[in-house]
Length: 198
Image 1: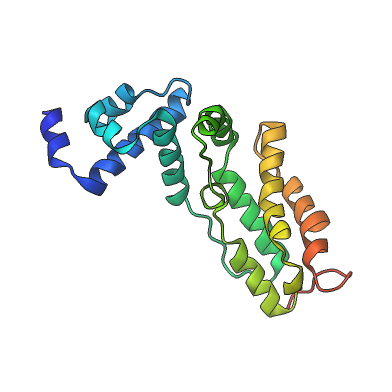
Image 2: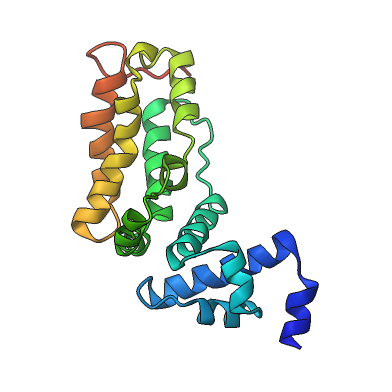
């Protein structure tokens, strides 16, 4: 029966089932215990089906992580001021990137280095930061000329750093500190408090 189901599923439906199974295995067993056999069994298919799509364990694991991130997007509505939007953005981003996910990334790093591959910014840093900052530029809260690539990387990188160093979820107080003491001083138009246009 399992083989019949596997044969009937094609393309995206089969791939989704496999990646769902791989994510479940990663979340419960960790990367070091991830096996093609376990994923195939959970997905109701066979190992050759997996090998045709992903050559190695790290290929499969990174695809599963990327899919998890894609299906858990970070969205931030217009709250009328950049500070509140940045705090909400970083809170949602941190909640989507728990210590367990960061641990997976570290466990996978040696295999990824061996295969000369890595997570892209889009995979781990996908977030509507540009949209939040563009609204702030339009409100006159921040200086567009200060939005360099380094500055754009800073907020999310600092959140990831906090999660990695403490190995626990980042607090709202730490997020506020990142926004108030690092991000806003780098991007706001004047040395005063970033103004809100309501």
